[in-house]
Amino acid sequence: MSAAADVAPGDAGGGTTTGTVPGGAPAAGTGARRLAGLGRRAAPGAAGVLGIVAVWWLAAVTVLADSTLPTPVGVLQGFAADGVGFYVTHLSVTLQEAVRGFAVGNGLALFLASLVLLVPALERLIMQVAVISYCLPLVAITPILYIVIGPPPSGEPSGTAVVLAALSVFFTTVVGAVLGFRSADPASLDVVTVFGGGRWQQLVRVRLVAALPGIIGALQIAAPAALLGAILGEYIGGVDRGVGPALVNAGQSLNAERAWGIALVCGLVAGAGYGLFALLARLVTPWAGGRDGGAS
Image 1 (cartoon, helix red, strand yellow):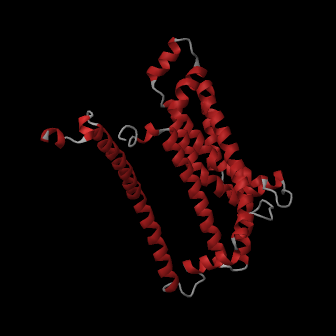
Image 2 (cartoon, rainbow, N blue to C red):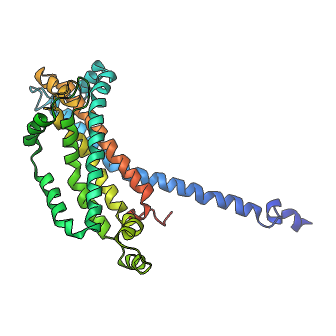
Image 3 (cartoon, one colour):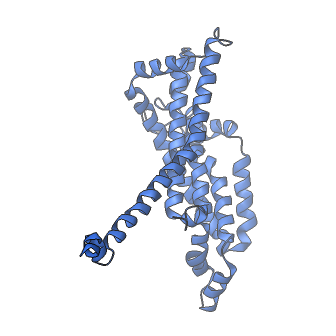
Protein backbone atom coordinates (compact mmCIF):
# COMPACT_ATOMS: atom_id res chain seq x y z
CA MET A 1 0.00 0.00 0.00
CA SER A 2 2.80 2.41 0.89
CA ALA A 3 4.52 1.73 -2.41
CA ALA A 4 1.30 2.28 -4.35
CA ALA A 5 0.58 5.47 -2.43
CA ASP A 6 4.00 6.88 -3.31
CA VAL A 7 3.31 6.59 -7.06
CA ALA A 8 1.94 9.84 -8.60
CA PRO A 9 -1.36 9.52 -10.51
CA GLY A 10 0.31 10.55 -13.72
CA ASP A 11 3.04 7.91 -13.32
CA ALA A 12 0.50 5.19 -12.74
CA GLY A 13 -1.14 5.94 -16.08
CA GLY A 14 1.99 5.28 -18.08
CA GLY A 15 3.93 8.56 -17.82
CA THR A 16 1.31 11.19 -18.58
CA THR A 17 3.11 13.76 -16.45
CA THR A 18 6.42 12.94 -18.10
CA GLY A 19 4.93 13.66 -21.55
CA THR A 20 3.37 16.97 -20.47
CA VAL A 21 5.96 18.82 -18.43
CA PRO A 22 9.08 17.98 -20.38
CA GLY A 23 7.08 18.39 -23.61
CA GLY A 24 6.39 22.05 -22.80
CA ALA A 25 9.88 22.88 -21.60
CA PRO A 26 11.67 22.56 -24.95
CA ALA A 27 9.03 24.75 -26.61
CA ALA A 28 9.53 27.47 -24.02
CA GLY A 29 13.28 27.06 -24.26
CA THR A 30 13.19 27.35 -28.05
CA GLY A 31 11.17 30.59 -27.82
CA ALA A 32 13.58 32.01 -25.29
CA ARG A 33 16.57 31.09 -27.46
CA ARG A 34 14.98 32.73 -30.48
CA LEU A 35 14.30 35.91 -28.54
CA ALA A 36 17.84 35.90 -27.20
CA GLY A 37 19.21 35.38 -30.70
CA LEU A 38 17.06 38.23 -32.03
CA GLY A 39 18.33 40.46 -29.25
CA ARG A 40 21.95 39.59 -30.00
CA ARG A 41 21.46 40.37 -33.70
CA ALA A 42 19.68 43.67 -32.98
CA ALA A 43 22.05 44.86 -30.25
CA PRO A 44 24.96 45.91 -32.53
CA GLY A 45 22.65 47.89 -34.80
CA ALA A 46 20.91 49.60 -31.90
CA ALA A 47 24.25 50.42 -30.30
CA GLY A 48 25.49 51.86 -33.59
CA VAL A 49 22.41 54.08 -33.98
CA LEU A 50 22.71 55.34 -30.40
CA GLY A 51 26.41 56.01 -30.94
CA ILE A 52 25.75 58.03 -34.10
CA VAL A 53 23.06 60.08 -32.35
CA ALA A 54 25.39 60.72 -29.40
CA VAL A 55 28.23 61.89 -31.67
CA TRP A 56 25.79 64.04 -33.67
CA TRP A 57 24.44 65.64 -30.50
CA LEU A 58 27.91 66.24 -29.07
CA ALA A 59 29.17 67.80 -32.31
CA ALA A 60 26.10 70.05 -32.59
CA VAL A 61 26.66 71.58 -29.13
CA THR A 62 30.47 71.76 -29.24
CA VAL A 63 32.67 72.02 -32.32
CA LEU A 64 29.76 72.77 -34.70
CA ALA A 65 27.80 74.98 -32.33
CA ASP A 66 28.25 78.01 -34.63
CA SER A 67 26.99 76.13 -37.71
CA THR A 68 23.44 75.39 -38.81
CA LEU A 69 23.70 71.76 -37.67
CA PRO A 70 20.62 71.09 -35.52
CA THR A 71 20.57 68.88 -32.46
CA PRO A 72 18.46 65.72 -32.37
CA VAL A 73 16.03 67.51 -30.06
CA GLY A 74 15.76 70.39 -32.54
CA VAL A 75 14.96 67.95 -35.34
CA LEU A 76 12.24 66.31 -33.23
CA GLN A 77 10.80 69.72 -32.41
CA GLY A 78 10.80 70.61 -36.12
CA PHE A 79 9.09 67.33 -36.91
CA ALA A 80 6.39 68.08 -34.34
CA ALA A 81 5.96 71.61 -35.71
CA ASP A 82 5.56 70.41 -39.30
CA GLY A 83 3.19 67.64 -38.30
CA VAL A 84 2.70 64.17 -39.72
CA GLY A 85 0.50 65.51 -42.48
CA PHE A 86 3.40 67.41 -44.02
CA TYR A 87 5.47 64.25 -44.38
CA VAL A 88 2.55 62.14 -45.57
CA THR A 89 1.69 64.68 -48.26
CA HIS A 90 5.19 64.69 -49.73
CA LEU A 91 6.18 61.08 -49.08
CA SER A 92 3.03 59.71 -50.67
CA VAL A 93 4.03 61.13 -54.07
CA THR A 94 7.64 60.01 -53.79
CA LEU A 95 6.64 56.51 -52.72
CA GLN A 96 4.32 56.20 -55.71
CA GLU A 97 7.22 57.09 -58.01
CA ALA A 98 9.59 54.72 -56.21
CA VAL A 99 7.13 51.80 -56.30
CA ARG A 100 6.37 52.29 -59.99
CA GLY A 101 10.04 52.54 -60.87
CA PHE A 102 10.81 49.53 -58.67
CA ALA A 103 8.17 47.46 -60.47
CA VAL A 104 9.18 48.56 -63.97
CA GLY A 105 12.92 48.31 -63.46
CA ASN A 106 12.89 44.96 -61.69
CA GLY A 107 10.26 43.50 -64.01
CA LEU A 108 12.33 44.38 -67.06
CA ALA A 109 15.50 43.12 -65.36
CA LEU A 110 13.94 39.74 -64.54
CA PHE A 111 12.56 39.41 -68.05
CA LEU A 112 15.95 40.08 -69.66
CA ALA A 113 17.74 37.80 -67.18
CA SER A 114 15.35 35.00 -68.13
CA LEU A 115 15.95 35.77 -71.78
CA VAL A 116 19.69 35.23 -71.25
CA LEU A 117 18.96 31.63 -70.23
CA LEU A 118 16.44 31.00 -72.98
CA VAL A 119 18.43 32.66 -75.78
CA PRO A 120 22.12 32.53 -74.82
CA ALA A 121 23.12 34.44 -77.97
CA LEU A 122 21.56 37.57 -76.44
CA GLU A 123 23.65 37.41 -73.27
CA ARG A 124 26.39 39.78 -74.37
CA LEU A 125 23.90 42.38 -75.65
CA ILE A 126 21.74 42.25 -72.51
CA MET A 127 24.68 42.47 -70.14
CA GLN A 128 26.10 45.41 -72.09
CA VAL A 129 22.77 47.19 -71.78
CA ALA A 130 22.80 46.51 -68.03
CA VAL A 131 26.33 47.86 -67.64
CA ILE A 132 25.50 50.96 -69.67
CA SER A 133 22.45 51.63 -67.48
CA TYR A 134 24.70 51.36 -64.42
CA CYS A 135 27.33 53.71 -65.83
CA LEU A 136 24.87 56.41 -66.88
CA PRO A 137 25.28 59.55 -64.72
CA LEU A 138 21.76 59.99 -63.41
CA VAL A 139 22.28 63.65 -62.57
CA ALA A 140 23.35 64.38 -66.14
CA ILE A 141 20.49 62.56 -67.88
CA THR A 142 17.75 63.90 -65.58
CA PRO A 143 17.27 67.14 -67.58
CA ILE A 144 17.17 65.14 -70.82
CA LEU A 145 14.50 62.83 -69.42
CA TYR A 146 12.51 65.80 -68.19
CA ILE A 147 12.58 67.39 -71.66
CA VAL A 148 11.46 64.13 -73.27
CA ILE A 149 8.83 63.10 -70.71
CA GLY A 150 7.62 66.54 -69.68
CA PRO A 151 6.18 67.77 -66.39
CA PRO A 152 3.35 65.83 -64.71
CA PRO A 153 -0.05 67.29 -63.79
CA SER A 154 -0.18 69.15 -60.50
CA GLY A 155 0.06 66.80 -57.54
CA GLU A 156 0.78 63.75 -59.71
CA PRO A 157 3.97 61.59 -59.68
CA SER A 158 6.76 62.58 -62.02
CA GLY A 159 7.55 60.35 -64.99
CA THR A 160 11.17 61.48 -64.79
CA ALA A 161 11.39 60.26 -61.21
CA VAL A 162 9.84 56.91 -62.17
CA VAL A 163 12.41 56.38 -64.94
CA LEU A 164 15.31 57.26 -62.62
CA ALA A 165 13.96 54.88 -59.97
CA ALA A 166 13.78 52.12 -62.60
CA LEU A 167 17.34 52.82 -63.78
CA SER A 168 18.57 52.74 -60.17
CA VAL A 169 17.41 49.14 -59.68
CA PHE A 170 17.89 47.61 -63.12
CA PHE A 171 21.56 46.61 -63.05
CA THR A 172 21.56 45.02 -59.60
CA THR A 173 18.56 42.83 -60.35
CA VAL A 174 19.84 41.72 -63.77
CA VAL A 175 23.15 40.59 -62.30
CA GLY A 176 21.58 38.97 -59.23
CA ALA A 177 19.02 37.08 -61.31
CA VAL A 178 21.51 35.84 -63.93
CA LEU A 179 23.93 34.62 -61.25
CA GLY A 180 21.07 32.98 -59.40
CA PHE A 181 19.78 31.21 -62.52
CA ARG A 182 23.25 29.86 -63.22
CA SER A 183 23.63 28.50 -59.70
CA ALA A 184 21.12 25.73 -60.41
CA ASP A 185 22.23 22.16 -59.72
CA PRO A 186 23.49 20.58 -63.00
CA ALA A 187 22.15 17.19 -61.97
CA SER A 188 18.65 18.61 -61.59
CA LEU A 189 18.94 20.26 -64.99
CA ASP A 190 19.98 16.92 -66.48
CA VAL A 191 16.92 15.23 -64.96
CA VAL A 192 14.64 17.76 -66.66
CA THR A 193 16.47 17.18 -69.95
CA VAL A 194 16.18 13.40 -69.65
CA PHE A 195 12.42 13.69 -69.23
CA GLY A 196 12.17 15.75 -72.41
CA GLY A 197 12.20 19.25 -70.91
CA GLY A 198 13.85 22.12 -72.71
CA ARG A 199 15.34 25.40 -71.53
CA TRP A 200 11.93 26.77 -70.54
CA GLN A 201 11.19 23.77 -68.32
CA GLN A 202 14.64 24.02 -66.79
CA LEU A 203 14.07 27.70 -66.07
CA VAL A 204 10.65 27.22 -64.48
CA ARG A 205 11.25 23.97 -62.58
CA VAL A 206 14.88 24.28 -61.49
CA ARG A 207 16.59 27.59 -62.18
CA LEU A 208 13.87 29.80 -60.72
CA VAL A 209 13.98 28.03 -57.36
CA ALA A 210 17.79 28.17 -57.33
CA ALA A 211 17.72 31.87 -58.18
CA LEU A 212 15.23 32.91 -55.49
CA PRO A 213 17.88 33.85 -52.87
CA GLY A 214 19.80 35.90 -55.41
CA ILE A 215 16.69 37.59 -56.78
CA ILE A 216 15.31 38.50 -53.35
CA GLY A 217 18.76 39.74 -52.32
CA ALA A 218 18.83 41.99 -55.38
CA LEU A 219 15.33 43.28 -54.60
CA GLN A 220 16.47 43.95 -51.05
CA ILE A 221 19.16 46.29 -52.37
CA ALA A 222 16.84 47.74 -55.01
CA ALA A 223 14.22 48.95 -52.53
CA PRO A 224 16.31 51.81 -51.05
CA ALA A 225 17.85 52.50 -54.47
CA ALA A 226 14.40 53.06 -56.00
CA LEU A 227 13.55 55.63 -53.33
CA LEU A 228 16.83 57.44 -53.91
CA GLY A 229 16.28 57.49 -57.67
CA ALA A 230 12.77 58.87 -57.23
CA ILE A 231 13.99 61.66 -54.96
CA LEU A 232 16.73 62.55 -57.42
CA GLY A 233 14.22 62.68 -60.28
CA GLU A 234 12.00 65.08 -58.35
CA TYR A 235 14.66 67.77 -58.26
CA ILE A 236 14.12 68.45 -61.98
CA GLY A 237 10.93 66.42 -62.46
CA GLY A 238 8.56 69.40 -62.35
CA VAL A 239 6.57 68.17 -59.34
CA ASP A 240 5.03 70.49 -56.78
CA ARG A 241 4.75 67.80 -54.12
CA GLY A 242 7.32 65.23 -53.07
CA VAL A 243 10.45 64.79 -51.01
CA GLY A 244 12.61 66.54 -53.62
CA PRO A 245 10.64 69.83 -53.66
CA ALA A 246 10.34 69.71 -49.86
CA LEU A 247 14.12 69.42 -49.52
CA VAL A 248 14.67 72.25 -52.02
CA ASN A 249 12.28 74.51 -50.11
CA ALA A 250 13.91 73.63 -46.79
CA GLY A 251 17.33 74.46 -48.23
CA GLN A 252 16.20 77.76 -49.73
CA SER A 253 14.61 78.84 -46.46
CA LEU A 254 17.63 77.61 -44.42
CA ASN A 255 15.32 75.40 -42.36
CA ALA A 256 17.93 72.89 -41.21
CA GLU A 257 15.59 71.10 -38.81
CA ARG A 258 13.10 70.37 -41.59
CA ALA A 259 15.83 69.24 -44.00
CA TRP A 260 17.27 66.86 -41.41
CA GLY A 261 13.81 65.62 -40.48
CA ILE A 262 12.97 64.83 -44.12
CA ALA A 263 16.32 63.08 -44.58
CA LEU A 264 15.85 60.96 -41.47
CA VAL A 265 12.29 59.98 -42.42
CA CYS A 266 13.49 58.98 -45.89
CA GLY A 267 16.24 56.91 -44.28
CA LEU A 268 13.67 55.13 -42.11
CA VAL A 269 11.45 54.43 -45.13
CA ALA A 270 14.39 53.09 -47.13
CA GLY A 271 15.46 50.93 -44.19
CA ALA A 272 11.91 49.60 -43.87
CA GLY A 273 11.95 48.57 -47.53
CA TYR A 274 15.27 46.83 -47.04
CA GLY A 275 14.00 45.07 -43.92
CA LEU A 276 10.79 43.99 -45.64
CA PHE A 277 12.69 42.05 -48.30
CA ALA A 278 15.08 40.69 -45.67
CA LEU A 279 12.05 39.26 -43.85
CA LEU A 280 10.70 37.93 -47.15
CA ALA A 281 14.02 36.20 -47.77
CA ARG A 282 13.83 34.46 -44.38
CA LEU A 283 10.29 33.29 -45.07
CA VAL A 284 10.61 32.28 -48.73
CA THR A 285 14.19 30.97 -48.82
CA PRO A 286 14.95 29.64 -45.32
CA TRP A 287 17.55 27.25 -46.76
CA ALA A 288 19.70 30.13 -48.02
CA GLY A 289 20.66 31.49 -44.59
CA GLY A 290 22.02 28.19 -43.32
CA ARG A 291 21.31 29.17 -39.73
CA ASP A 292 17.67 28.43 -39.18
CA GLY A 293 17.13 25.69 -41.64
CA GLY A 294 17.35 22.66 -39.43
CA ALA A 295 18.55 23.88 -36.08
CA SER A 296 15.16 24.79 -34.87
